[in-house]
Image (cartoon, rainbow, N blue to C red; front, top):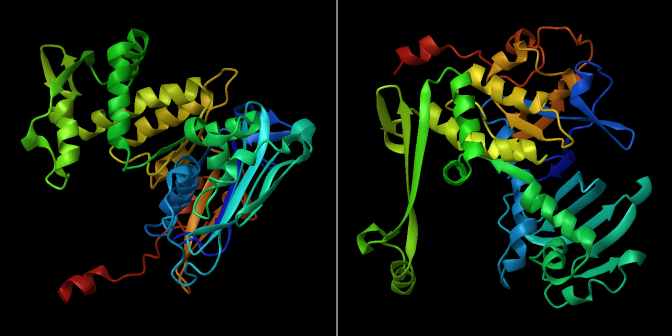
Length: 415
């Protein structure tokens, strides 16, 4: 589970912002929280804000940390970390990232700082028996380890570079269980959904439907329960040769030859309705296609207790469908504890008895320096737990909405 994430000097995020999944004093929907080390942990949270206020940059910052942990081991000498700082700070000011999470029933804190696209500081701690213990601390290229791990990271000294995270190196060049568990949280247990990876989700879903009859029937039942009257879905996966004219023109000849010598999967999917069938990818609506791409990964996330961070979950979906997807997370009962944190513009969700005050967050753009603020509804005083949150948000009571003081009629008349 994700407990907390903070960062500073990342895109529109200038000063430090802190997002927390620790429950506050609100006791609404208490059954939908999880106890861990004396704290109550939230299962979901939603982030609202005007266009350009930094909602997507918050998700981007989390994804940046995830991808750096997974991939920085492959960075070559002279290759900087591709991070964008705030325009008024630049690469000379440190960018700072910190995340607190739980995996394998153990709590970890991982963080690092970047300057001029290189690592200046990095640390990893865990909490056996509730007490903080050092796994490693790093200053530029030098690092020290806790007493339990003395000598176990010596194999990392030669591969550690200023453009590589020690966590990435140690996961690949040591055999420390705590480091492996922490690494797998980023690689396997924290899932990011955005417009950049929708095709991968659809491919995963179609493979699952093709190979797992139980998953296929779950998808069909889910669609039918939503009032989508499909009767069946047929997925066919064949191997086929790639033709030269199908390859992008920018590939070099050596790489083209490698691809042309092998086979690739050819996937077709037909949605069966009463009396007719249609091609899922070519003829089906955007909303139904998104449901197919979402549902199988969501099943995996829910059943295995993973963390999902999603940018604009509602894109292409009706408000009621978004409600049902979120409700899946909120009401799933098992030994696992899946979490979903997502950005949205869909204010109707605030009127559906889904969220507590500490589950509702807002981003707002400070106009003086074009930087992002992040705060929760629980931080605003005099907000009742039974208040109409949707109405309060639309009226501007909580901030985080566009300032609609523009005379559109006057602007149009002058065009």
